[in-house]
Amino acid sequence: MADTRPRTLYGRRRGKPLRPGRRDVLERLLPRLRIDVAGYQGRVLEPRELFDETVEAVWLEVGFGAGEHLSALARAHPHIGFIGCEPFINGVARLLADVDQHGLGNVRVVMDDARILLDCLGQGSIGRAFLLFPDPWPKRRHNRRRFVVPDNIAAMANVLADGAQWRIATDHMDYCRWILDHMTRSAQFSWLARRPADWRTRPDDWPPTRYEEKGMEAGRPPVFLGFERRRRIQPVKQP
Image 1 (cartoon, rainbow, N blue to C red):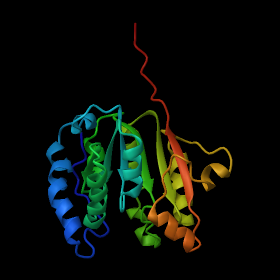
Image 2: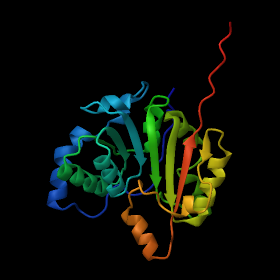
Image 3: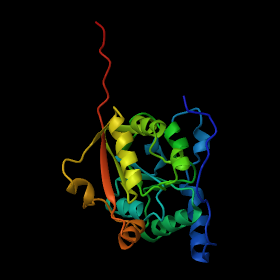
Image 4: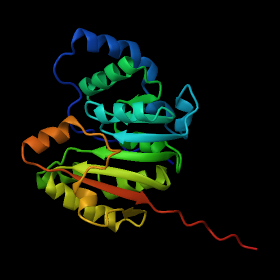
């Protein structure tokens, strides 16, 4: 059953006023591409049914920022459906501008707390997940606001298919240590790194983001962490 406790969504929802072109694309595309997760409370959301064309799998990005990573993946994988969660309207407008420019029919948007979406999705319904440069909430009293916490790890493990990857990037070393501590404690995930280059170097199939580039310019080298959803243990049938 979905968690019906009230959620607090931290961070901004709106920035500078949108330019006319961005405002136009938002008004045209958002009503058609937005997923109303509130309408799925109490029932299971099957993500493949959100797309007009049949998709081989559905991938999820939590907090897509300006959307350049999600857009690049959607162009590279036209047979994969993509769901992006981002409450910041300026970032959503940027993504939809790319969707409009490239005619991407395999993108859907949730402008709400990603945790609400996770509560609605069916078990094993997501083929890959991304959490790129989330807010590190560096003050100790704000650490509880971080996305990588036990409840969210368990929720992500529930919706990811066996063997699916959860890719996480950060340029904040305290958050990196936090992520590794929490993820390696989880029985549902295995860290895929076998050598330092596996987390120091962005994989070729992992498109860069503007935030990554800004961090590099500021002397904050990022880390790229890949975790695999371990296979679920099937109950033994009694004879």
